[in-house]
Length: 105
Figure 1 (cartoon, helix red, strand yellow):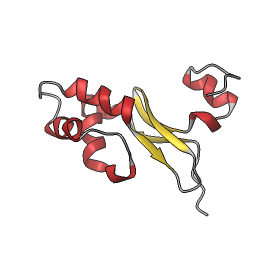
Figure 2 (cartoon, one colour):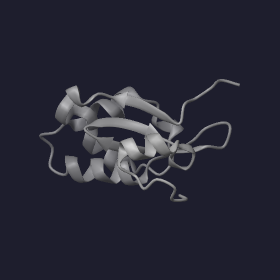
Figure 3 (cartoon, helix red, strand yellow):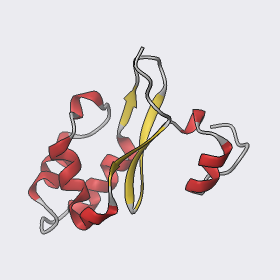
């Protein structure tokens, strides 16, 4: 079995306003469930497109990836874009990301 960490950096904040565009163009979106096609299309057009940030918010809120071992991952952006399995993050990682430590998700 291939090990997948509970926290993975997907895109650095150095990409700035292009993180949404780079995400939809650079990752296999078939591995994610819940992302509406309209949001993908809008982000693909770039940050000058009306609704770009609304589309990105929709993707951040809706995207779910289930790993082969059953762990559920979601997107999290704090500048950098992360793929996280909140349920199995260590207390140290939760604290570093600003989540409640000891809270059951």
